[in-house]
Image 1 (cartoon, one colour):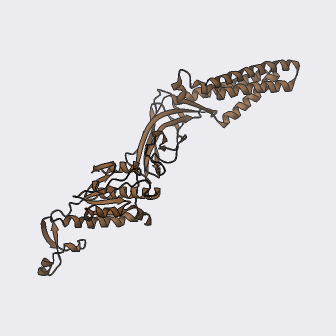
Image 2 (cartoon, rainbow, N blue to C red):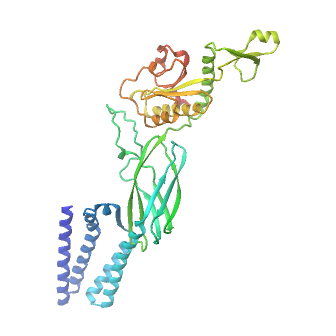
Image 3 (spheres, helix red, strand yellow):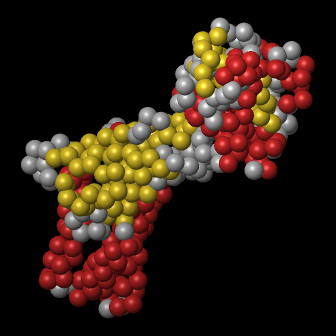
Length: 435
């Protein structure tokens, strides 16, 4: 800051000296020397005013105001300043009072532009609402509401802008294969929630206007928006004035639940195997009834069929009381590629979502996620999960003896030694890319 201040002071000193010498050369009749010196004086003054004064103003005692407001000179503003400089040079060389009046009016217009834009942005309040649950790849809509709290002054030409300043395009989770230890990334590295801008041409006093924003996230993970910017070029478009609004909003994007044709093949297997497991446990017989096309052949009562001459099946009291557990066996970092790992996470999320909406009682578990019946808690875990840096826990700690387990795993061969393989359906992660 001190270096900039000294440079600005030196520049203004040189500009003042050039202005004095231009007066001397004009008296001596040297036209070109007067033109060069006066132009240098004006250019240095304008350069210091544009580059240094706003920078220093943001660091004075009123730093909060300086940080909230930011000026940018537009192309039209640059062209306007060039015209002012040309007319000012002509006024200095000719001594024409009319040209001095024109220069003063043009400089006053720049000053009025700054005050008017500040007044337009002063009383604006911003409110953002995002959906509670968002899945990667799906379209969602957020609501952005702008409120003019001023008593009588309307606002014109307001843009709500979200800039991606030094932010990665990926969300907070990363597949960090070459790192020895797992360390959480700082929230400032999270990908932004909003991009682009929303335009409000006119906002009367004491009025709210809402705009709908379409959100679509390609990947799961944590997304954060720290600030949004309210900007305007009102009234003359010489300056683009921006006011920063602290937002501090973050959302967790769940993995995609659209696993394609692969899940359509797995769901019938789950239904048949879990039914066989539960009904083979010796539940009480409820009744014997006529065979229906959707019944399994293993439930046919052959004695009753022989007596009646038509197919009969046994129905048990707990035939529909299915208890399932979705297990995501989080592999080590070197067990899978990043693409295969994401396919495994997506399959676990798709199974959890589809089966949680069925008639079965479903629970969920993973190495870092205690067993729970809350599907959103499990999806939240899958949204942020990363490959483990340690040896994965044995599957015995995740598999339930009283439930039928669907295990999304990179080590299906190890399930043969668990002792509960009969009530477990492995879903190998490496085979998912083949569908």
